Length: 445
Image (cartoon, rainbow, N blue to C red; front, side, top):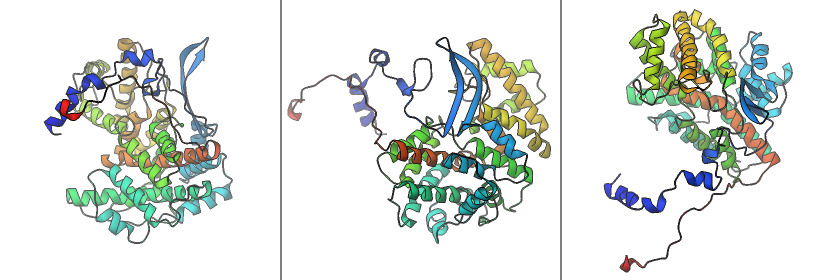
């Protein structure tokens, strides 16, 4: 930025500075958070609930984490589905989140067919939108692609519930193609990699098609498809208060089209404070393993964790990425489910030692953070999700776009719920704390 512009900014700092004490003075919830770290409630929902603490005798206390989809605990949903062989857990989850109940066999089959019939992109979309305009950032590319779908929709500005559902299901069905094609286009253009394009197969589920379209030989094992299906389920929703879902509802409340609302949500998820934490975990853990090896004893592990906490290692942020969560305290149910199902994938990939290292790292980090900071933390979903993706040989650039592919159904469900039961434009208030000034003609300044 031009230095003169920054000089103007610094010159005006006396007029623009908002001291921290103002937030308490005017009872403003900074970052929409209460003093105890809990979020400020901004709406009502029946779609999902995130539980990480409880109140006893008026005090906030830590409890094991719970995640509910339409009142069904996520662990029950996963265990019930994974007793079966086929990999349509994500599709079943989409049905549940959108319609509020678990489908019958025939209802699920019909719903899956609705999605499968919309896998294909519009004619010339791949050539004109994705291949001709590759981007160095896949999240930006996804935003552009979703916005471009608007131009192929004859009823793009119809924001009725029925049409929004139609549009949203179409976007959900096309996202695997969008993210895989965007990745191949980027790799071909910027890294000179060979370009291969596989069309989605109409009999595959979402997870299967992602692996099929991503890999040059289209091959994958049943275990790989099941674990990716699980990943999609675990990221499908996380309540109405997460940033990208809140963004979607805020933008949609203006009466704009769903393509604009989804593009805004993708922009929100692109931010490293919301999406992308699992990539930070992978990079941190790879550096840790490089320094001490996977055979390191617990004391060596704790020593390197102290270096992370004391800003002496990795990115010098003072964070152990993947440990702790804004809501969950004693446990993140998504991380617990991943740990449980990761064992089979690690065995298939001959990476059992690596998984064991992650487990020991988690246990030692919990003890160290409790001792040094006096707070109870657990591994969050990002601590293990990045490991899942790496064992699946999914490129780092696709970690956050896969989050989009999963969370799109949550965005759609909350978008529709808000249309049905509120419908007003979201317009939070702010408090003006600046001074009043007299206008001075320019010749007298």
